[in-house]
Length: 389
Ligand SMILES: Cc1cc2nc3c(=O)[nH]c(=O)nc-3n(C[C@H](O)[C@H](O)[C@H](O)COP(=O)(O)OP(=O)(O)OC[C@H]3O[C@@H](n4cnc5c(N)ncnc54)[C@H](O)[C@@H]3O)c2cc1C
Image 1 (cartoon, rainbow, N blue to C red):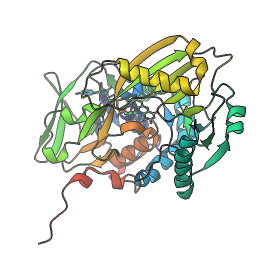
Image 2: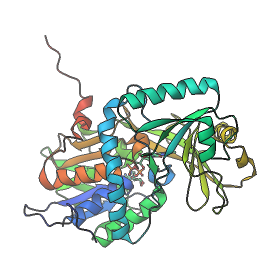
Image 3: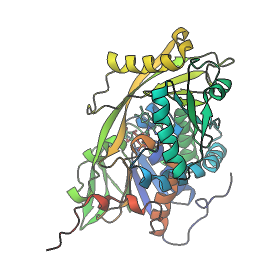
Image 4: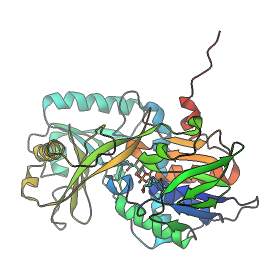
């Protein structure tokens, strides 16, 4: 196993840590902490890795997703994007499993002259922010992706926006965490976080109180619903539903190699021949039913860009819940309850943000210090600022 900043024993007292939620966020923090010598227990109300982490697309799209008003997220998303190659290699070493990190890059295609104006605007914004994006002519797009519809007018291309297979990521994180000594408790819902005198004591799983020095709340879209948190420590997180559909390509002759965004959908080709099409964005609470309208919009948008999908079999369709916060940015760091740390609200970027979250939250727990890159994302940004009389 490679040596990492987290695999060295530390000299200060080593805290025991209980983590609520075994998604990409909870498992990666657990893996980092256990590698540093902490006793770590993770609790999930279902099976590990079956929440939003299972439902995601796995795009590591720090650049092409940047829209006006989202510039403040860039230092965090770009930092995590830069960590991904080493993180993936370490994880593959530690787990013995591949996570299928693909590096072909991402295209945002323009299908008409109207689209081209919008995509050019996005290109100019992102290039102006110093992001590594370039403009491809229609002919160049078709040279790289010959099965796209012939009229494609051009594309914004980013060579650094990769993808990972998020389901393989979850399995690898679970295996690496177990190998590092993490106790992963599945089908073990946490009903309450227990505190005393402004400090955490532990958490309740059924009628059992599990004591811990630190608790990390990483329960994704469900993070606001756990009892025992005083209102100022409760993260304002809600479920943002996303439907997806998956088709089966011939993996020896795939219709697509890059991640491709169209005006309404995105297409993500996997190495094993799956072609994911996503995703809707819906405010429907925890209603996980698929809808005809949602599935139709995905398939129609994908078909307009890549007509050959009409022949492909449908393999699977699902809905998941992004953990959306009030400003769509994650909530990372300490709370006013001593020992309670938040790692939630990652919205549509939780897979991208896994490495930076794991490293920074583990460091916070081990050293008490917040990395500058996560400081702007603390819970206190939502608290009303003092009114000057
Ligand atoms: C359709 C869709 C597409 C997406 N595409 C991308 C993408 O391309 N790139 C990207 O970076 N991100 C993407 N995301 C976002 C990403 O999936 C999430 O931000 C990320 O998975 C959040 O990880 P998590 O570990 O916080 O949450 P989750 O994976 O949801 O894990 C939380 C866990 O907490 C558990 N839990 C809940 N309540 C309790 C309790 N009381 N006790 C114990 N356990 C509990 C749940 O069972 C769950 O396993 C997408 C999301 C969706 C829905």
